[in-house]
Length: 238
Image 1 (cartoon, one colour):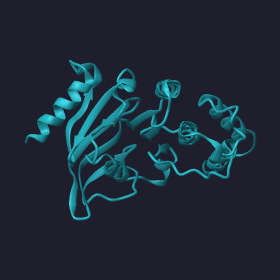
Image 2 (cartoon, rainbow, N blue to C red):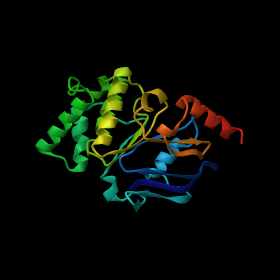
Image 3 (tube, rainbow, N blue to C red):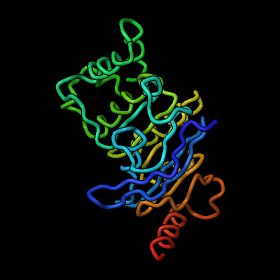
């Protein structure tokens, strides 16, 4: 089952064409990796999918429905690259606040927050203000916030930014456990070595064009870094 379909989207920003006929699909239960060099159109693609901006052409289907409906939004989790956090709140208060958007209250909310704090390794820092958190700790609480509603489709934008090796291992294990529990994960990261072992498929976008579409990681016949660089160089020469 295709849980996400992006069909021939085009988008201009400041008069410049940023996306040019981008098409791909993500099946239910996949860990899908979206890879790109800087300025390739990754953020614009993500914003179009999330409904933050509209493409001039093309269609996007989520859970089989055109564009994002209120019903589909309730089944989606999203962690942006630059997460805005309320620094005057503690980690626990921040997750409580976000949980209430999805109707969680009382004991059910408390149990969910405690479970997430443990899952992302922030139990001991739960009652400290976010203003005292390191960058890596803020990334982890942002990740916990993105899955508080137990999403069926999770978007992660650079989830490993600022994390040490232990933190990156924790995120990798969490992504795999989410997939095993039925969550489809669509994410972006530049850290190739950390994630190629957990991904099912990847797409590569360059200069607004999708140059590799939904390729199985197992079908990449050589080193992934070399594969990525070769594809970018081949496309840039055209």
